[in-house]
Length: 473
Image 1 (cartoon, rainbow, N blue to C red):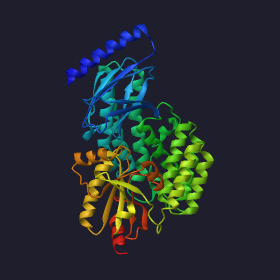
Image 2 (tube, rainbow, N blue to C red):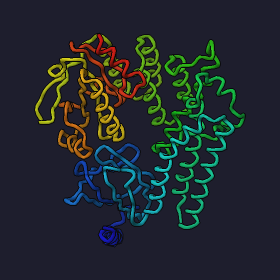
Image 3 (cartoon, rainbow, N blue to C red):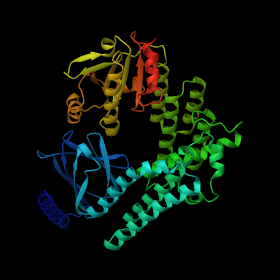
Image 4 (cartoon, one colour):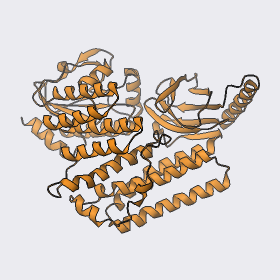
């Protein structure tokens, strides 16, 4: 397989050079790969949320693509709902190989430009592994916690220094690799007050060393280069969670704190509005927190306050219309209302509807191949719950628009049951009607098709209590 990849890389590089001698169309790079257990027959390549092309796989689930007029930087490639990033620079000829069963873990690059990308994907995987340790370290006092995460950062800096001494790295790679280390460290510090045990967040903030958040003085809230990078966006969200907490305590009547407090959420939105000037970054943050609040709150007055603030600050007409529609949909999904008529496709590709299959206490939950970890974890959880509570029907709906065959392949590959598995016939319209965000959302519905809870989650701590309440109604 490696021989095939290298031969192909040499061929396309020579071909590219020949072309460029006669027709110089700017910087370029070649990007391609092979996908084992492909979920469909294409890969979507994009940059900064703009789709560059949808690239077809050949009969061997391989592809090669020339990116003309290359803008050096991070690109996104997506297949079957999963995605990853690749750093492309002029004259790169990068091939990858991955297995969709272990998308990130199996991803390996070869060719010109491969080493820097293998470094970045390995750092991504290390960060995922370290996350559990970080949450454990969060239970230490602040000084001890700082020592632990400083130690992790120093190890990463030494690895980067060794990599740079061994290979000729570009300024662009150096910037991304350093940002990855820095923003992981910043992220780890921002989560500390929220993950540290104890409900009194005020006391936790007061116990922090004076220099704990010194790095905030240098933070760029409008980094156009990093705005597509996962760790930068994760940091921004937790940073605003944290600085809004401090702002909230300036006017709170007591030290009691709940993340669902409307004043805390308004403080956070206000801080975003004042600190972020980059249009895209601001819109993403305002949108994220507004939708999250609306999804969790049942207080119409508070919902209106958050929605009004958002619509007054957002300049995205389409997004404002979408969130207003989302709020209206949530209003129609309140406890006691009928579950909306929803057309489904069953595993035999026959059409049915929700009202035709609900005749007992029912849980309706959802999955997507885009969120692969949630897909696997939720299927296991549903099996566990359905075995424990046989009097409850679990209806499981795939929300993708890839067709039922693709959903069945995903279920079959993971040895999951086909029982009570469905797919929306009209995914876009159904997701809007059911205000389906986040994907972890679930509905409890009684035998009369009345909504008992429209904002629950099968992984919630009290979910089994909710099930017992549904059964005993």
